Length: 182
Image 1 (tube, one colour):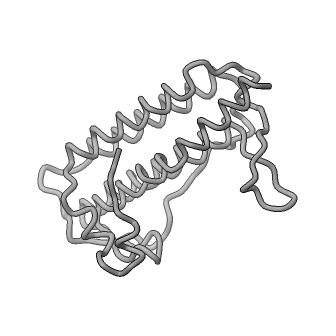
Image 2 (cartoon, helix red, strand yellow):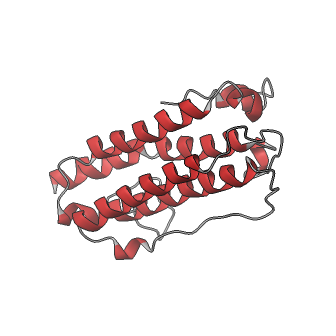
Image 3 (cartoon, rainbow, N blue to C red):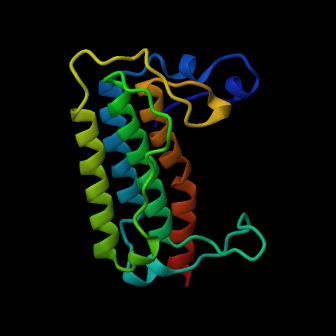
């Protein structure tokens, strides 16, 4: 699991680039595969009914519902792929002015088979974006994906997708807990 000290970032003691500069291409590859393995472990006993269960979520806004398992997976895989796609372009020196975010309609993920297909597809896509990196990547070109984080290079962009995915682990566990209790 990536260890990025967001407290130091919020306190102004370090920049996002400072916090990610020690990460390597090999770290990103290993963390990508670990992320997908962890998600698979969390949802190991998932059923079709679990995929569409609308969980209780006290953090959901007024008038909103908790996200289904399919919704969380569609969302986190889209963010992961966005970070990977942005990183692949940055390594070639392309400045990115817009988001590269596209999300599978979560309403279309209603079965375990569809959920697994989305996860396998995303792992393949994400690893393919890593494979697109040149042998000597440009790590000086930056983009601002999240203003609070400031400019980030390819490693920072890719790592952001990983961190975002990891932030959903507890949500996935809670959905599975509620599903098994239902």
